[in-house]
Image 1 (tube, one colour):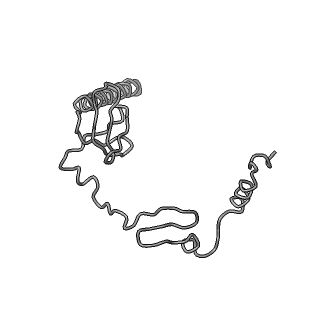
Image 2 (image 1 turned 90 degrees about the vertical axis):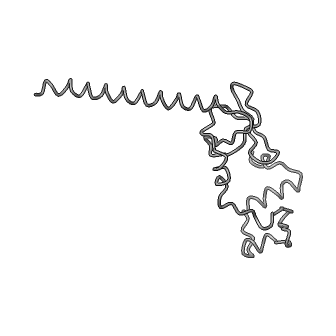
Image 3 (image 1 turned 180 degrees about the horizontal axis):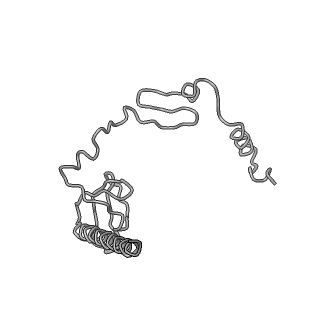
Amino acid sequence: MESLLFPLLLVLLAGFMFFSMRKQKKRAAEQQDMQNSIQTGTRIQLTSGLFGTIIDASSADYIDVEIATGVVTRWNRLAIMKVVPTEDAAATYAGYVPPSAPLTADGDEFSTIDGTVSYDSISGGDDDRDADDTEINLRKDQGGNSSDSDK
């Protein structure tokens, strides 16, 4: 009985390895077919989770993807995770609510479309900035370099 156990384990291990490799090759072939089938205008999801529309797919190594209106980035073709069907493209941004008023920073005040908010009102009234930040700013005001005092 003991003499049959070792060969049986070897056969099971070999079978497991065979089926794993076969499944992996099939998945790699599907991924390669998908990457070769993309063309300009295809909506995709990248491995980083970023969604975009292919603007230029003429290169064999990279693609140009528009991730926002007028914002085009270059990616390696291997970064394509999947093609997003156009009917699913609207669901890509489901739940997105645009901000009511964009913030713009101006020193210690933040301006919104509705008005201006000071740093103190956001931080609860106490200036909780680091003492090191103040020291660095003082050195800059005196024309010194922060690395000079560290020596």
